Length: 204
Image (cartoon, rainbow, N blue to C red; front, side, top):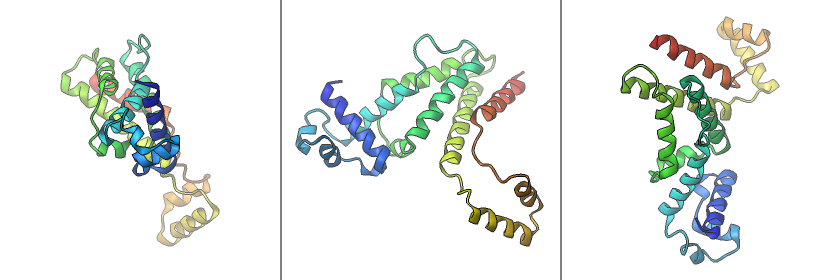
């Protein structure tokens, strides 16, 4: 990738992180870099090509470095899940880019290959191995959504919730509030351990 193309992709990522995926345009990138819009097309011919390059940059961050993927399927899944979780939290607009039907490139294909490698030692059929990958992916996505959409832990929120608990007879909500509140911040590592332990118990 040329140095100028690197700059264009980096600018696109900055705009998406700062202003959202829909804000990414050639015009905005040109303004970010202080160049004419038409100059960009020399390096990135259209929006589809831009999305491809953005996907490649992010896909590379999903990859466990060569030689570092654990031979133990449990730890290998943890390694991949941690990288996915960190990337999604840093760039939550990725789901929009996927929805835009962006083409995948070698980096993301290698991520898929690593996920398949992680479960390749499981003594089960190919369909079940892929279900394990999907279960971990779904867990990661759920934790990201929970982390990004946590309700405001404010006095007003707690006051309203307690009032509703008393009025509606919600004994468990009332008890949770008495014990310190409703913590929706995901304990990612603990939940991941539970999930992998459940997979192991199920397959054994």
